[in-house]
Length: 285
Image (cartoon, rainbow, N blue to C red; front, side, top):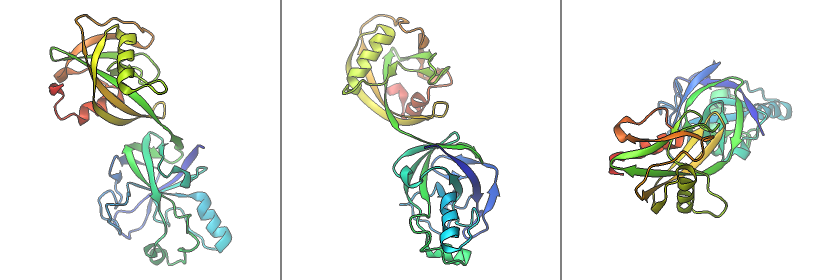
């Protein structure tokens, strides 16, 4: 189920004209640059409802025209994004990509009296269950007309935090997922495998190090734009016996090196970057 982005519209102020754009920046947790809701100046200012992104199907507007004789131009519904070829209803409580922007559908964007007042058209009943979708923006970036819209499923990941004498173990990835980025040891759990068991297994398979006392110390949600994946990653701290890491999977990693927290190599693998950003004091590990 892959759709595409047909139109982008923003309004500088509540009730203001919707201005078409070919492309724009989307800011995570905020919305479209230059839009009234990104500045929290929209007509509705209820923080319980997401307004990072509002979307409507082009097919819904065509159905309203066909079935009710009401012509609604793109942007006239006051939604920021007009889509085609994807069911927005099916994106509620799901992650999806718009180009390189990651979003999560939260609820239907039902029509309201304000929309009828602004358009001067009797749109309330015709747009019931066709008013569109509200979504949170989790990973920002640029979107442009024509971008694909692709639903994706959350996957599980595990990162292994190995610290010795204030240094943390990282390797540069060779695998297609996150190629060229720096990451802790880790991987994906097998079926029915706990994050702790996965951490010990992956650590040994990748480095030959034997870990003990695995402890969950954090969890992140991060998107990988290149592969259109989303990972919820558990970070497990382990203790290790004396010894140096070996390169046991050279097709996946270039090598293993100890780094100080203050001088980590860049770029970091997105889940690792999210973990570092969320840690108030990495030196405490």
